[in-house]
Image 1 (cartoon, rainbow, N blue to C red):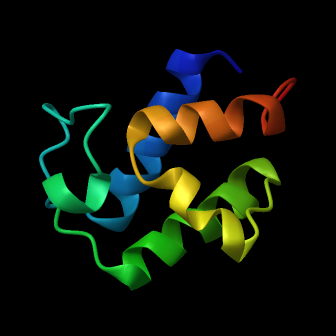
Image 2: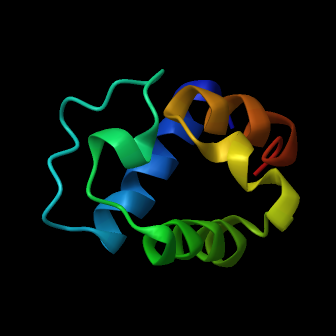
Length: 83
């Protein structure tokens, strides 16, 4: 997957978890939880969806690496290569 594909995959997951959120103006370098109404359970749902949809395991100690859309792409690029 390319960076744009990963970014869109994350936005698709967020859209399925929080359908009322407006994702049209998500800033890639701002923490997702600061710009969207996501709580810790929503964040865990994102991690679970990554595993379910793409077979990507994110250990708990790596959760901070998924804070922004940019950091998600950076962290997930090697894990989602070839998916």
